[in-house]
Image (tube, rainbow, N blue to C red; front, side, top):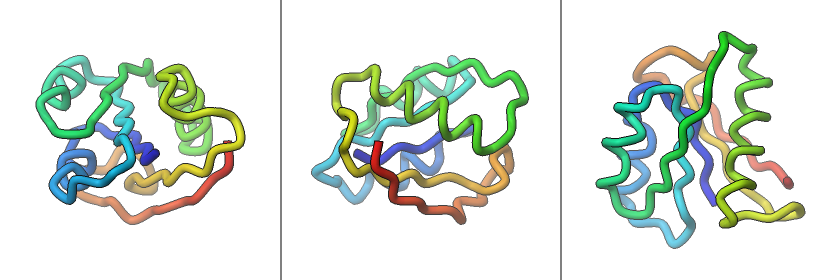
Length: 100
């Protein structure tokens, strides 16, 4: 799976254009963004309350939220992509591969 914490949804939209075989689990604090992302192929948008936590905490919460979708399991390899530091728009500059 591809996990992307997102403010605006742009990263998930760009990834969706490539039609990956893996699901795109887009995690956002904005209900509007979550609603918009339902229209993009392969996107599984999920709402996550962001209380101004640090970047690493947001990524950990996003992976936990992804586990709740049923599309990934403990032990799976996932790709996490986001703008770092999280919160900036148009700055997708981080890719991590992580075993859950």
